[in-house]
Image (cartoon, rainbow, N blue to C red; front, side, top):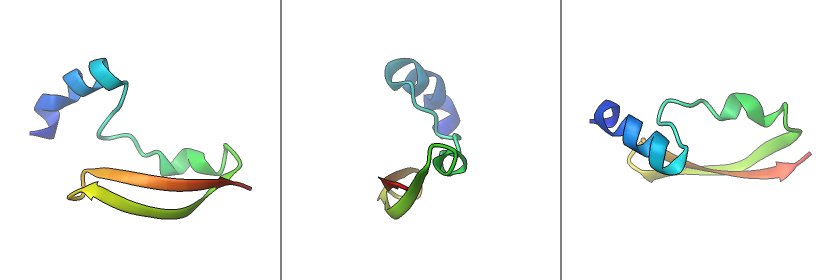
Length: 51
């Protein structure tokens, strides 16, 4: 189902279901202080702080 929605979500929100955002956190000099799943295991909220 997520593959069917992916093009629309990318167009509408600029988001991607398969993006691994965590890999960019340290490069941006941030660190993850907390995270939680907002919808099953598909949508994750990352709470970040500047290092």
